[in-house]
Image 1 (cartoon, helix red, strand yellow):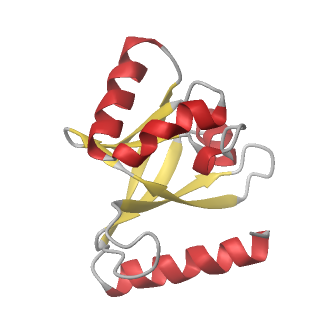
Image 2: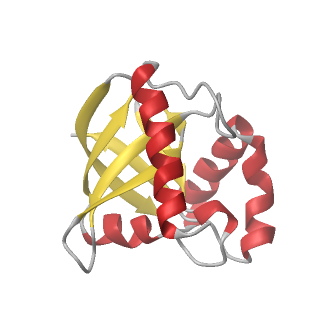
Image 3: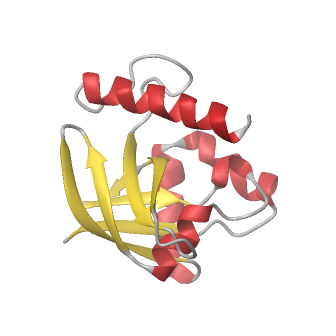
Length: 141
């Protein structure tokens, strides 16, 4: 999928989410728990939007840096590592948050296991990507 097609796909999903209280009601991501995170580009300094599948750890949102199974980490990961202040849209609210990368160690493993338990289709990503999948904790500020 080229960049323009991917952007159009994301726009349609976000429009669906906004029209349905944060729920995706049609297409391949129907029923998936998603949020929209806006970060600051690590190199450009420009706002960068990412549509992310989430799990929860208490009050925090947890996302995995799978890049859809790509062998390289997603661009948004470098963005939040450079500037952890993000904006999050989920359900019918938008709020400021801090995104903290957890790239290795027991906490990363715990978050990964919990994420896979909630979202079993993520289990194949480590083998598919050939890399350790970083986790990111998104906490309201």
